[in-house]
Image (cartoon, rainbow, N blue to C red; front, side, top):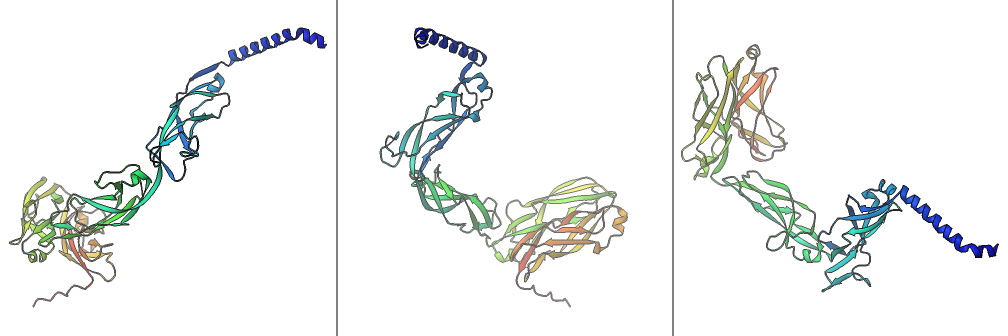
Amino acid sequence: MVRWLNDNFGSLLLALVASALVWASAVSAADPIQEQALPDRIPIVITGLAEDLVLVGEPPGEGAVTIRAPRSVWERLTAGSIHLEVDLNGMPEAEGSPCSSSDMRVWTCQVPLAWRTDLGPARVTEIEPASLTLTLEPLATDRVPVQVRTLGTPAVGYRVLTPGADPDEVIVSGPASAVDRVAQALAEVSLSGQRQAVDQIVQLLPVDPSGQSVPGVRVEPAEVRVTAQVEQLGGYRDVAVKVIIEGQVEPGYWVTSITVSPPVITVYSADAEAVVVLPGFVETEPLVLTGASSNLSRRLALDLPAGVSPVGDQTVLVEVGIAAIESSLTLTRQLETQGLGAGLYAVPSPDTVSVIISGPLPVLERLTLSDVRVVLDLRDRGVGTHQVTPEVILLPSGLVAQAILPATIEVSITRTPPPTPTARP
């Protein structure tokens, strides 16, 4: 038997090789190998970065691969089946590290991409890019001041006191070269047309001494609260505009709306006392509605005391909506206040308003004064002078308050009770 094997070994080996070739050819014909580029790009994952180092810049986040695999594997192959990685473990100072540095602070590393697959028969034959050039720096932190920069100017007659930030210092972290450039964290606040106190949450921007942004640096916290008081200058005052109406529209028509623009104006006098004694509103010259049957738009002058003048436009625009109506009437109502804080007192000026009400005539004919309330909501308002929009509450259904004159009320809130009016003899 041994002799037979020795005599026929060559023939047996040749037969075995031939059989293997036939089998491989059959398998290849049934499931041919294909090599081609994967249509989808693969995310590149960077691992092993030391905690005291930081990656500078933005290296490529994706790579393209060419894969060799049987056709049956290609049918199951997706971008999620292939993984591209860059391992920085031990870099940059480990022996044999592909990193170089001229000052031992900034390292440049040429690191090849490694691949792995979830599908065994698949093989990556080409990666683009084949390696990444990475820059590594020591991670640095520093504490820098917050600087508030104001943009624009407040409304005429107002000034903004020095704004403050809370907190007034923040921590910046990132590459040492970038952190060294940061002089302060900038908080920008717009003051354009500002009349009220500033209280805003503002995003911070790390900047160098020249005010230029420093990229690649993290700020903690990223936001601060900026506050600033806004004061009205002496001789200036904001007052509501009250439109004076004379006459009635054409019978069968009614006033649907009256708007004044602006509803609040700023007035000025060289004599500061002259604006202090104003009642909180100014009246316009009369707007005559007699015989009107369509919308009106008029510019009206203001009735101001001598020495007091408006800042800006000398007139206001009054627009009156007029339409055929069921019926309407005008009532004068005393103002009510609600929501005033404990221990506070409020004095509205004026203390009465005219309300134009429309609705079905039978309902209007049964309307009583107690059916109409005009309320000033003073919730969350503290000591000081405020411009408040009144709200009309109508008891009967089907009625609509078309307009309130004036549309804005000045309310003075104090901690001391107002003096009791002295009865006239």
